[in-house]
Amino acid sequence: MPDRSAARTERAPAVERPAQLRNVVLVGCSGVGKTTLAESLALAAGAVGRAGRTADGTTVSDYEAIEQQHRRSVQLAVLPLEWNGVKINIIDTPGHPDFDAEVRAGLHAADAAVFVVSATDPISAATRTLWRECAETAIPRAIVVSKLDVARTGFDDMLTACHDAFDLGPDTLRPVYVPVFDGGRPCGSIDLLTGRGYGNPAAVPDTGAARESLVEAISGQDDTLMERYLAGETLDTESLDEGLRHEIVDCALHPALATTDYGVG
Image (cartoon, rainbow, N blue to C red; front, top):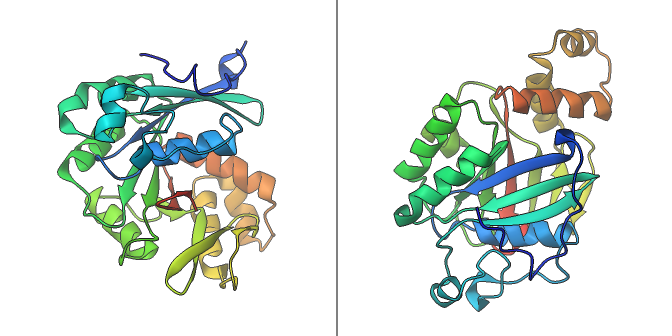
């Protein structure tokens, strides 16, 4: 697995314990925005000083000349980042079916998979197949809905489409951040657990029902949290974060997030 980030990013420090290392693979069809997402994550982690663009051939992941020429990935790339004292290797994979072996190599190395689906296109059969394969091997999965700034399909509609396409059970797909729109275009997002807003939302929508649904889903598999929740106790963010982590690792819950065509929303 080539690490092609050395010449373009600040390397994350070496780790001494497995708990300090995570490998996360980005999967999805060609053109859904995996490389753009990887670039945004590298920028947010401070690994690059400026986000590149696929259209300009300036992204970290698309390092080879052929990738820059054709504006698409042809082999996987590893972007080592550091976040909160943990080294995270972001594995960006190609989306074209000709390079399917690269995708599966990334999945074999991954602790978790992030499925990137575009709000401008239907979910492909290949993406559904990859989801089933990850389910069979119990790889934790999250969903990122991309290109909400250029699509007519809304975030909630895409979550319904993902629920049907991946044949998910009740309460297994839940947004953790919800996008905020202004004039039909995303302008920020709200963290459902903390209530914190990001971006420049003109008006913060009422997210009480969405948060309640998420808290119920997190508490459902944890007897202690469920007892506290049913007793009417306000669950603290730390407890909910830990409960969410366990739910994700156990593949009992798949978090959903939203992005624009320019990166993380």
